[in-house]
Amino acid sequence: MSRTSGEFELIARYFAGAARNDAVELGIGDDCALIDAGPGRQWAVTTDMLVEGVHFLSEVAPEALGHKALAVNLSDLAACGAQPRCYFLAIALPSVDETWLSDFTRGMLALGDHFGCSLAGGDTTRSREGVTISITALGEVPRGRALLRSGARAGDDLWVSGHLGDGALGLALLRDGVVLPPAERSAVIERLERPVPRVALGIALRGVARSAIDVSDGLAGDLGHILERSGVGARVEWREVPMSSALRRMPPDLQRRCVLAGGDDYELLFTADPAMRDGVLDAGRAAELAVTRIGNIVAEGGLTLIEEDGRRVDIEPRAFDHFRP
Ligand code: ADP
Ligand code: MG
Image 1 (cartoon, helix red, strand yellow):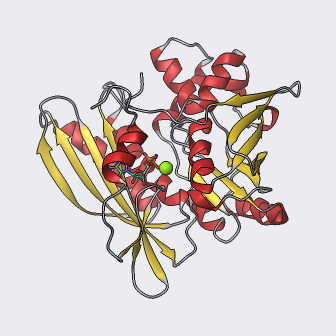
Image 2: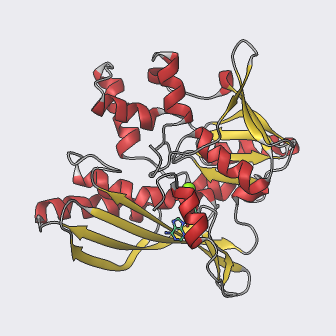
């Protein structure tokens, strides 16, 4: 591997060019692939892997880990507006710890039950070191109605659900000794360890939003994916970006890092025609989630942040990348 290659270059160079038969109606490059499921329907399919020491700390409670392993996959289904149906679990374990497995499974199955998504298969094997979990999830979507990264148009409003940055703040609390009062501390860590996929919102946004992605790698990078796939640019008003009261009290540079380059928020970032503002607000109400307009899409490439004092700063629209220093 060339040392300068990032995760996304590797995907582009080695995987994205693979031949695609006509069952695969949308291949590599979005939150889910779309597979022909007969007249009027498509399967949205996604895979996400969690590696001990890379995606989760060894101390994490197994019940929370089971929840999160499935949640990150359901979040990709949500980003496409798909209805979760079933999933497959591949797990590698260094040793058998039945208490651990029972707790892990309880967390995973409870989340699946909540969203009507059944465990339908998988693989179980030994690892040399650490736990690795890979889940593939399938959701149904009416043909042609999936939300894609590629649908944004100049003039669209840019929206986000919930608030951003608490996932990364949670990690800073656990790892870097950032201090908060106990009640806020546990609320923020809950956001990191037990994210709730925005499934109802994704479904309610079918036909309302023009493009969508889930925020797993930070606002800058995930918005960057929409910009790249849609061939547009964006302006984000920093003062509009929703943050928890805990994050609001943090120093400005930590706020920025958590929101822009953090990750693990699993909110939906989406664009919609300004004529659809009422439809977006209705979708938020139906999903019982706040939705906030944070900027707009422009024709020229790039991502511009508009500071509270009106200054414009160009931001690198780059996601967290596993192979970049
Ligand atoms: P997400 O963050 O939503 O999980 P990514 O941005 O990580 O998605 O992935 C971008 C695209 O690249 C997705 O369509 C994903 O399926 C695809 N992809 C990632 N790794 C591989 C791989 N090893 N082989 C084929 N496709 C891949
Ligand atoms: Mg995603």
